[in-house]
Amino acid sequence: MPQLKSLCIFCGSQIGNNPEFLRAAESLGRALAVNGTTLVFGGGRVGLMGAAADAALKGGGSVLGVIPQFLKDKELAHSGLTEMIVVPDMHTRKRVMFERSDAFCVLPGGVGTLEEMFEIVSWRQLHRHNKPIIVLNTAGYWSNLLGLLDQIIAADFAHKGHESLVTVVDKAEDVAQTAEAELANPKPPVLFTS
Image (tube, rainbow, N blue to C red):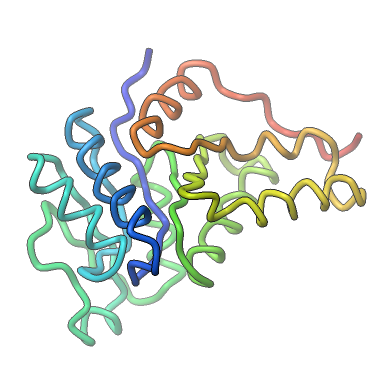
């Protein structure tokens, strides 16, 4: 089975109002450190992203941050990472995170998290990559969104099979194993026609 060398997380720059969100981010960071998987993220020291990075570092893991200059200038950059890449803009940030990652995991977050998730999902739909995309549905946070994706398929705005663009797990401890399994047995690309 191929080893998951790097996993990119998309998640909130805040911790949210449910303690399970923070626990899941920290659990994922620890699990990646144990697995020997580099955590790739947006480079911030705040919110769920900072918590996941801190947990990975505390567990002896490697953490790569990618942050735009304007956010670094606002003193949101994490100062203790294994590697930090400062980029000129958000588009470059997402491209570098994509290039440096074997798979992706979406944790609870807001509009920015949704934007990152939908871009990476649409790239997969368009056959620009076939990397695993894991949705960590902590405390049912993403259940309404997952229902919307089903509705999009039911309304014929996406073809049957598009539900396989993402894989859903409920526990942070299952993320690395799920990504490893998909890397070993990749999903077939989705079809553009039904």
